[in-house]
Image 1 (cartoon, one colour):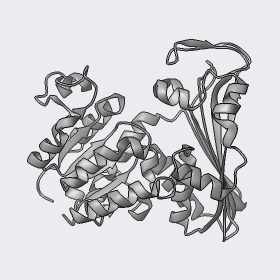
Image 2 (cartoon, rainbow, N blue to C red; image 1 turned 120 degrees about the horizontal axis):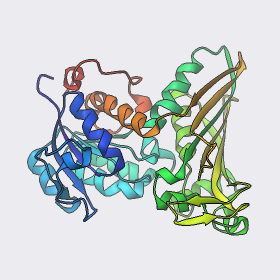
Image 3 (tube, rainbow, N blue to C red; image 1 turned 90 degrees about the vertical axis):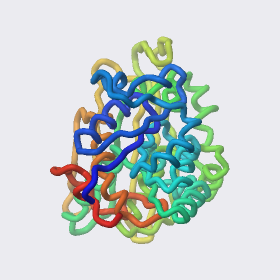
Length: 360
């Protein structure tokens, strides 16, 4: 493609500070921005990025349909919340206007095994309007492509064990509460842990009914199995409270979490496959003590055993860079909801991103 890509930003919070700057620095053009927050609507995006006046104001998300229809950007980046229910409207507005869209929403990376109906509806709408939808971000690379690439060096693979930790203080009150931070152990068991021990079929049904929210690794295991050509026969999820021996102050929750109460949780997903390979993965999201840090660790058991560890990953920046580098592949993909394991392995963009676009 000869012309610069034209990008719209949907969601102008913490992630957008990096996303907007990154797409500009990769040679794209920002032409619109949307948000639902009254405190952000009307602001210049340069104020959000900290770069001074830019000339694009943030519009109310209610105006997105009309503006996308009028402006016809090549891509809309959706950076709002973490579930498909939350981003459904944004994806629908984009697909309805024939605009390719890519989201930081964790579930959007592989929503076929948790929000199948929503994903199927979006897939049909995108195909009808000749555009592509997908999710990307930190999990796309650090829980996905990095792991399946490493598997290419293993002779016999028996088990994939993965864990990733993150500080719920960094992601807002809704996520902190969703991880049980601040609850007593009894409260945690009643509100979050009461669905532990269910069968695969029961868990799938309750996820489909919206009773249980899938952990990030529920979708990630689906992505990994799809990429590796594995066929799932069983998948279960267990939520376990994380505690600390001392009181911990949570600025996000506006409270002090008493010693022994839940600071968050570990969500463990175990997947069994027809091929005999087991996936045991967990997300550890909790209020950090001073000594804690983000950590990403994956072990592939077999011949030979191999472990990969990433300490202190810059999760926000890595999410935004991974998504930005995905944009040419999004545009070149077939119409529909196309998850990223169906795309080429992500790569670094040396040239302006429009120079990598081939098909559209």
